[in-house]
Amino acid sequence: QAAAAVLLGEGNAATAPDGQLVETLWGVRPSLTLLPFDQLTPELKAMRLDGVSPLSPDFVPESWPLTLAVNVVGEDTAVAQFLTAWNGPVTNRDPAKMTRVAMTGVTALVRATAYNMEQFGILWPGEEVGPVLRGADIAHISNEVSFAPDCPYPNPIGGTTFCSRDSYFALIEDVGADVIELTGNHLNDWGGENALRSLEMYEAAGMATFGGGRNLAEAAEPALFEHNGNKIAFVGCNSFGPAFAWATEAGPGSRPCDGTMIPQIIQLRDEGYLVIATLQYEEYYQYPPLPQQELDFKALAAAGATAVSGSQGHHAQGFAFADGAFIHYGPGNLFFDQMDMLGTRQTFVDTYVIYDGRLLSVELWTGLIENYARPRVMTAVEREQALKTLFEASGW
Image (cartoon, rainbow, N blue to C red; front, side):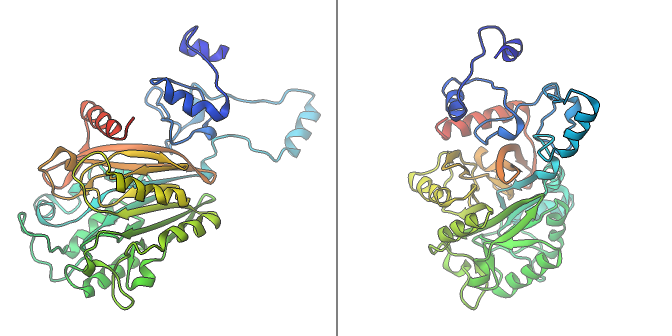
């Protein structure tokens, strides 16, 4: 407490029992706390000091003002023997135990998005968001549309039967996608044969897929990763349809929400996986989630999901914490052409920082889509407005 008083000012420091710290901090917002790195939780935001965050992959502990060195002092031989015998941790921030997962919202390389890609370059939409995705160990893209060799030149004001030209696949590769979500509504718009062909393109590029597949059984398979000792599973389903977008026993498509995902989450959790669950839900063009949406997302958290993300969210939606899980009801469009509302232009990339087998923290990258295709980094004013709006919609 004395050390905290030096940093926070005399009379402004207090202590709280471990089990009550988060609740105490939320009850007296705004508030600050000093916490060991490995005791961070997603409910607490890790602050930057002089522009530096301990969550960053290029973090240098020696330059961090709150790094505390612990040394052993004593007779030389005894110290040497102690250090030789010591098999415990030597730091509470070991990069070899850390995994960064970047979760995104809707990608649909069609209509005005595709038209502007043709005008300004295939890789142009990813110029500002690309570094965030490439900086993750596992980058997620939810691509709702299949690639087709006969896909015509894009009509910027076209309808809602979608395909993407093969050349657009370069954007998916350029942003560093590692796992492709296939819960979208439009996988079969251009025929099942192109959905199958697109799966082959992902596989040839070394990308894992989940939430859709060649048939119902494959669509239900999780995408599994092991990185730095962390076991991570992605599962997802499409509750909205339409029916022709769903996989069948013999045909490709997205995984319907048929009640099998909750027992799957329980099983994966019991196998030691941190489960990232996604829902292609009904689309709501508002910031707050609807009551039924809250119930359905929180049911996945109750089953043991570490994080739940709303892949349907063309419009950015709020957040929640439930049963130890982080929930984002809608990260918003990533690459799509809806420019008519502020909420459909606002986009989030949620980077889950996983450490030593648990979700340690979540970083929120905020972007604003311009020219129907390209998310750029929000200004400080835009970010403050967006976060205030989303936090209020979350009941915070």
